[in-house]
Image 1 (cartoon, one colour):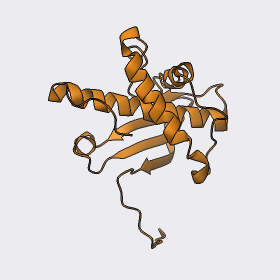
Image 2: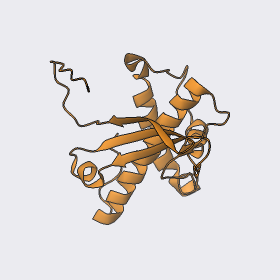
Image 3: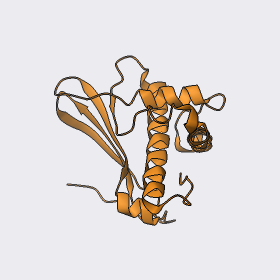
Image 4: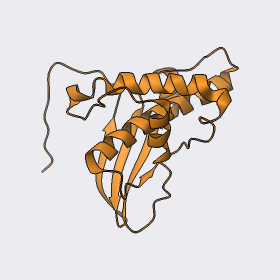
Length: 162
C-alpha cells in the first residue's frame, strides 16, 4: 500500500505517504476485527483519526485510501480472512478508521495497532512492520507482526521454543 504524490516537498510527501498508509492499514485491521469479533466493545488504539481525511479538500486522498483498502481486502480470502460482499465505500472506510480512536487503559480488552513500525524503512521502501497486539487488563495476550516487504521463501523452516 504505497500511495501519495511525491511531487510535494519531501517532508510533506513523507508525512502524506505515512498518513495514507496508516489510514489504509487502520481501515483494513478495524474492518477485519469488526467482522470477526463484532463492533460492540471493540477497542482499537491507533495513530490516525479521521479529522483531516474527512475534509472536503481531502476527497482525492480518501478515494486513494479507499481504492488501496479495497484492493487489499479483495485478496482477504486467500489468507483466511473475511472479504466484503462489495467494495467498501468512503463512509465505510471512515467508519472503520473511526473505530481506532480508543485511548486504551489498564482495564478491559484493547487492540493496539502501529500501522507502520519502522518509519525510515517504510519511507525507503525497505523493511517495516505492521504491529498489532491484544491487551486484556494490562496483560499482552497476543502480538502479531506483518512484514510486507519481507521476502517470501519457497522453503518453510520451523523452529519451536522449548
